Length: 533
Image 1 (cartoon, rainbow, N blue to C red):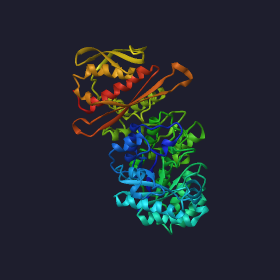
Image 2: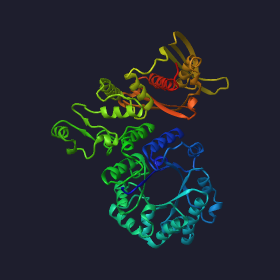
Image 3: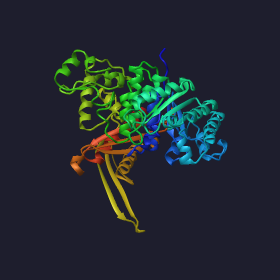
Image 4: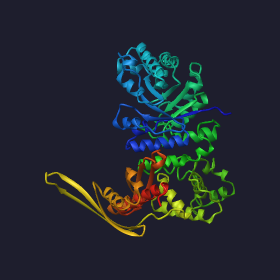
């Protein structure tokens, strides 16, 4: 059997340090669950005690099928015992089965930045790891600025690793924190250290400041490390972290290593990559390796002819292996295999030769050209697919809606903004005219719909809006631009009892109309899943 490499994702913490990235609790949960489904071994949830978002995430963490949740923090402060350090206690006490602690391994930092004696620096590492282990946690030590420290003072850097190793750390991770080390240096140094720390306890954590984070991570694995840390799509501070979206297929498809991601799960890679971008409300990188829209794109001419004869000519792996698709630009051929794969995920048994498959492929392409994005809106895709097969009842039919927003000063002289929505719809042979108020047009529209539908469909009382995002698709049109609205909804799971989260999408030149379309799918999916009659 191939060597096993363990994957550790730091998107929810390192990724949050990216300029322009701000995860909400709902974002963190959705991304964490997607990583678990992908097959990542560890998901780092954040730093308990550092901010309210991370505290809220750890207070109600997602339930994983396979991944292990890690809480991140630092070793004890100088002058305190590990058992008596509030920051360390907050991290260990967060309830996650894994605790990852970083500590200084560059003597320059201890002497010049912290003013800490090197002997105590080593004890801070060993004592903190031992405290985590004694409290039943799987402990991981991130050796911060390790490669700079090793070059400057190899003896001290080794002492730091030995302290973590002797204290019971499951993994000791060598961090290229400023991203300045090159692949040949990484491979040499990691190889030297396998004599001190066995490879099956040694990890790598790289930053991308020289555009070598992926290469450095793979070099470390070649040298013996069996734990790799990184982020989805290479998110991270400055130039980013090692890109797991590239590392994973390189390890599995190119280097033959085993991971927690089997062939079937690897085909979800593109979906997970684009889901992250949708959560961040930004366009995916078309040129991204493996998962980009252009990764398997071929324009007219010799390339297309060669690919049609033998795809291996210009495709180093099959697009379907990573969940992507071939895109022959001149003929726009692609997508059928992806749709069939999504059908299987939904439990829909349909033959590949069924003409409805191609009809749906064409419909998805048309809608995506218009601005829809189904990678981050699985519920909308499921409804689209089931409607193509004629399997979704019409629970209600909208006749019209009107939304009014008023901005004024109230009796106390305070500026307030209120919205009112009027909805006219048909359901179960009756016509309803209802009004809803809210602190915004979408809230008011939701209230008006619930007022009409709630008595007939009590399950809607359990449904709530968790997140709402708007993205401008045609910024060149100014205030007339087409917008995409993504809505995430949640409930307590009905009779099944397990909480559910689902995402829907709407597109229109009118943001309220786009919001209604996403809201319509959200309500319809809920009623369909609950078996409403």
